[in-house]
Image 1 (cartoon, rainbow, N blue to C red):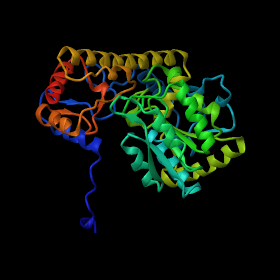
Image 2: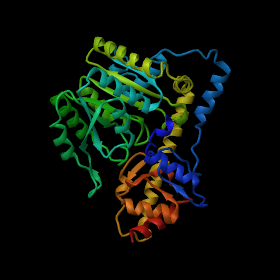
Image 3: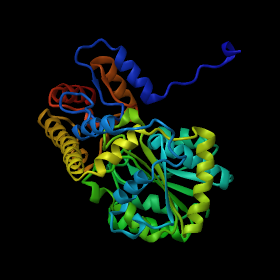
Length: 397
């Protein structure tokens, strides 16, 4: 039977990683996969995480299942990071949190929930967006549409086009928004634009689904939550899909959350019951170890301070590589202005490189970039910067 099954098309990012692994070039560069790299090109384990794991190893007493919605402490910390410990929503019963296997798990659970409760509604996704967004929602049975987001000619948010599309979406549909560090463009709305987006969502009776995967990688924990907080002051209901993969470096532990914000406690409880039923049918219970690390770090004043310092270090390194890339491209006489990359935030930038130029970088220089031109800035190091810039100047010429 299996011999008759068609071979699936490889995921563009995962396939790029496999090609990189098989490349024997001694100076190959991987700017495709979305994981943080330090100056040596490694994905480190944070020191606060190591210390938390030592504590867990000495104190853990059981490997029994977690509840379907995960650890209550974990849910409390998720809410406090979103809104701050003193914010009403941090403890409001109209907010429920479900611990999930990573941010992708949160998106899939959200998709299953939307399809079950609103089977004929669509979700609108920015163009461009993370390549897996459409896959996840379509696999859950939710039809997807796109709204314009980025102006490639100016390398800025095309806010007027975004608003025009939002103002025409049928009531009851969902709209996916990136809370910060938009993947793949690195371009986010400002505070006034977030306010206007929230007002349009209310006017059109649209449900925002906020993807919050890069909290702390833009300008800081407080600054990166500004868009979410503005939305939550305006819209009555929303879904939030978040992840600790990036800001804790817990990629393989799969630590995420789906947060439900309802109009009232009754609505939150009803939605939570349906989400828990979805979880039960998908994976039954969430994994415990990664969430226990997060709980241990955030419950300790010392470890939390250490985490914030390490997170700031990752953020500053990325922003520094943005600056050095722009300056180096200019120094090498690039026939294009790349200053926009320094203004973007997060791990990713839309470089403006064409698919043909990306192919040349891979074939001639063993430099791996997603064919859309998205670059993982965290993959740039002081050691590979010069070679990278020389190669880009070459393909531009």
